[in-house]
Image 1 (cartoon, rainbow, N blue to C red):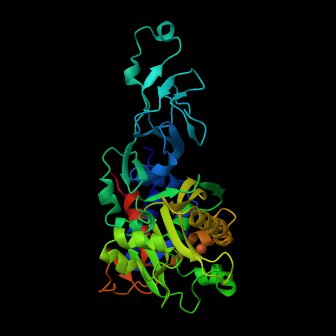
Image 2 (cartoon, rainbow, N blue to C red; image 1 turned 45 degrees about the horizontal axis):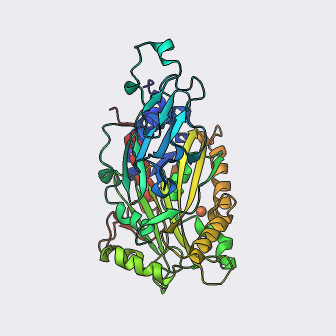
Image 3 (cartoon, rainbow, N blue to C red; image 1 turned 60 degrees about the vertical axis):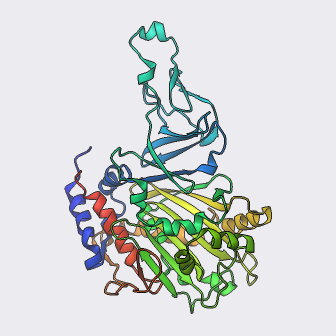
Length: 436
Ligand SMILES: [Fe+2]
């Protein structure tokens, strides 16, 4: 591990108590020393989302993903098992598989030609006898495995062999993930490969927004209300809850519209599945929810909302899952999927994908609004004066949690407050100051 930068270390230390003081310094953004801490102490220690199992449905299917600055190969082997390895030839460290996705039983390094099965075993070394004699035991030099765990079709990986079980890491946030993942009797699947784009934006700005920023919607996306794309109005927009999981970092914003039909925007057959698969407590939380935007710490977010592609008409509900990856201090890569229930009608799937693309694809009208703000903030925070400033995350600071809320986590009303963000920052700081 590199020697931690002490200025960055003491900067991050201040965020451990953000739940008390509510101040976030501009300097945590765009800082190479903070980025190094994020790579070594957060992304290399946490569980990281890698892929949805529906992205590799058949033997030989693979996708190439990343954990921080490490390339990761996720493949379904010939026996049908999910295999996750560092995407690196064990001989000289070359990137093993250079395509984003495909189907292959074996991978061959482009440098000296070592060949591995998709299950990771090294099976062929060119000129083995001439070059190595008996000095290379192929069994010792397979691809490096990555620890994995799954929840409802989501494949997670961790680079830390001592990481806590995924179940504990999610720590009850599964209650909210189910809302996005149990819409089909057999779960969900991706609608095609992810949209992927890069941006001059610090990944943490997205992490914050994805944790449930109900406050920005009536301003950033105000035209959506005016033109009738949303099933809500600016006047009622603040109604609902924000929920966070202390020390876990997860947070979700649940916007509600009074008098709205339960699960507005889903066809009846999907609502029937939700009523079958969700618990009474989950139904009590989710039936009134119009918009649910939540982040599984540190960087996997979900959004469910009805959207009307033809303004004023009854909307269609879509779900998008997105992962934001830090590429460097102040730059990020977004991967964005549309999730649809397995077995849903083609009519619904296409309508949901169309709504997702128009709203939150890389050219989506609301995605563009957001990205413009985040890119601007990232550049602005580099200013010599701005860099020394703190920003107030004090909304809801003195508020008591809702006592009769039926779900897990700490819930505050209304949908607009900073409690999820304070928890995000204090959890982030906990990881970054952990000396282990
Ligand atoms: Fe937004």
